[in-house]
Length: 228
Image (tube, rainbow, N blue to C red; front, side, top):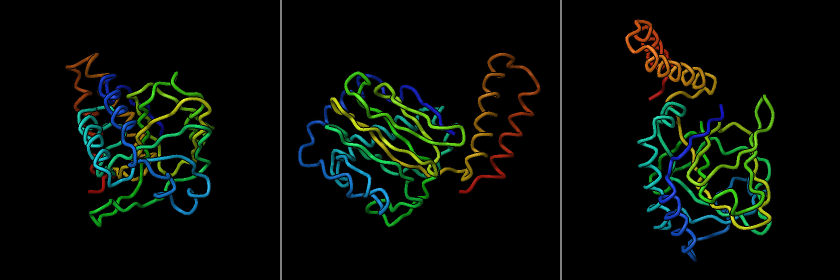
């Protein structure tokens, strides 16, 4: 399930984060530093070192915004979120086709996270660069994603995906993973569709007795499938 989540950050927040990253200087390192064996062979970009203070500073802003975003909560059902990371593509840099590592070690904690869901939060406006589309493959084909600054897309961590070369300007983004309460993508999709339908029915017919039944079905399915 691929879901676009608009306005995770407003224009001011995205601009402030972009300015902090652009001024990060030596905090930018070779993107292959955190790539697995497969990814390192096709990854050409720069990223902020995970232990850089600026990464923690602006990452906390993103995490706080996600906690207040009902669409993110509904679609991802987050259990644990990997600290946001930040990358930059320019001058033809690209990331070839790959699948994200299934498990990642959260730096400085010794804790591991299963990467059920991958996330990309765009920080540069689409008109500021050429190329840089995120291409995600699923059973319905290849989806091309290039969103306004502050918008985010989430998709299954099992997806084959790539980033097209950036041929003009620079593409700044945050990327991270999360372990969901519901491991299976098909089950998450069903719960998401059910939750959206419940919300629509609540607005259209707030007193309808079916709301109680449907809400009960949602929570019983979540109770059946969730891992805590």
